[in-house]
Length: 275
Length: 193
Image (cartoon, rainbow over all chains, first blue to last red; front, side, top):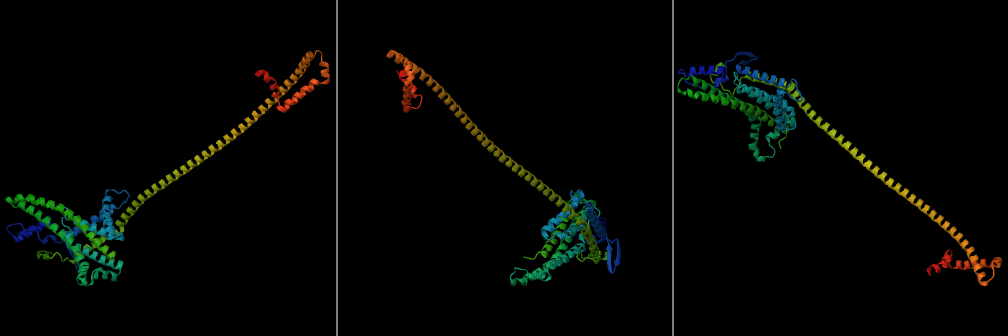
């Protein structure tokens, strides 16, 4: 529940139903009023509160990471331990175990992905922000596009362009007549579906999570103020908002991790030839 | 955008500005991660690994040292044992040698004592024989003189008859048995009967 959401909700409610019935929050949630707009080299920039949340989350995560390694020691302090655990989770769990023996150089990239997504996702349940920038499709799309470029580039670099594309076009070990079916699927899979699902999975999870929270929160406030017997459902709605917030916390970590692990498997496919 | 918002915009079509902002934000994270955070973490991991491996290596070195010391002690112990055995053998051999020497010495001594005893015995026997010979001669002459009734002493002496007789007796006895048997044969009939 955000102030702007409340505003928009009330505005929409007034607009669509002057009688005062409950109007569910809509897409307007994700298009708050810009704080500032400017145009640079023909591109329009809108600084909205979501943009500011993105910057705050990013800078906070950078500050946390830098602070955790500022004075590195063999026996870690609390802060270093937390940072180190996160980094090890990706370095050992994804870069080494998923990408493979030659995956360690990708650990910083994968860790960046993880921490960046995690920090932005966490904004979904942090009071006064309570919206994840990842629920704006632009940001997951940026990450997915970078991943897309990276795993294709690594595939070409590690296996050679001819071998890499040949293995994708003509999957080894498949009977020749089956190529009619398999080849288009493989092309679609490797060059369209992978980056698209990567971006959409993260975006849709955060988008839906935010919508759920807003619906329950706004529902609760509406039910408390409606002034008739249905006010008894207010606490239930508020409770649901709280429960869903904890569920959202799970989703936040899970989606950040899933994005990173999937990118790890794509990198693994690029580094190691198909067998 | 406010117009778009009012017109229910498509959330899957992002504005270019947001994409650029997202790119910049992620680029900063990447930069900090690659330039600062990841190297530091790797450094910590390396230091920790080295610390652990160093500890293990130290422990291994200590173990090897202890093992070497044990080997050395064992070798020394074995050496000492063989040395002790050698000394014991040597001592035994020496003891045997000493015993042997003593035995030969004792045998020589006893042989010497026996020889001397025999000599003394022979000497005393000779003296007894000589004495007896004189007395027997005198007794025999006296006895013969009484039997004959005259003194034969002077003549007997003059002619050395008694001596000759005794010598013959001696010679006979010597032909039968070399020494004291004559005496014993002389005495034995008396003692036996």
